[in-house]
Image (tube, rainbow, N blue to C red; front, side, top):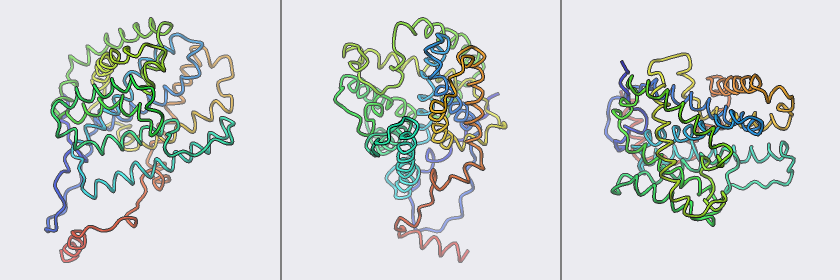
Length: 371
């Protein structure tokens, strides 16, 4: 039987701050299901990046790559939306936006720019905080999505509206690269969907019947992807370009947006159906997936520079298996508590000194001392 989902974090923390004295809230219990889901998703992200140099020589790897890219980031974004349901303009929420998204973005955008000057041999590559480099786009997108959360809670039919915006984005090659707005808009429906979900929706996909049905669904997805590899570009699943930039007529984007959304959502549901709901050895790593996400890119960039893909055997089936295992091990290590403690200053900095204290905070502190 599936374990009940315990909503945590911003999804339920919606009470406004006041100056009244109240007993300290008990520590929030993390839900093992979501931590397991985040860990498995970050392993797929790392595997996908590791497969990129292998795609040209293997149609099978290309098909697996296409299937994984169809759902791994949508899964992350749906879960991010689910845990953003309680976001509002409270000062503590805005402070967390700065410390958990803005500051890490500045740090890692700068770090990746400096690092890729070396790995890409482009010593003059400028540091541009408006043009996210490599995987830092997710931080800017999540920042925008969370800021707009109150709007999506107020409007009627938020998901159709988000899909319409995503479709319009595919018609607009002039959007440009500022804050990777094209990708932010095209992935927006998944975040808005997450805002609309409730615990019972996750219980539905965790039923035994869904787990069984997920097997043929993923099998069919692989067959379709294998057929599609020589016939279409997998860049549609990156959601970073307009239809015209992908070499298709503009109206293709309007059609592909809902089609890709439905396909990705089906695979996300099947993926979540397979996620264990009990605590496992990897559950604790779910709290460190942002570390794995932001750090594994340095390893992926180094692999090409150091010629790790040059040996011929790497491009054979055994090599693809080895690359996958190595990617999984590396990203697993990067999610571990020791790495989190060592790099917390960059990923989750403590910047309380930077902000003014709310008027209610001294009163709470005095009450805590008296208590």
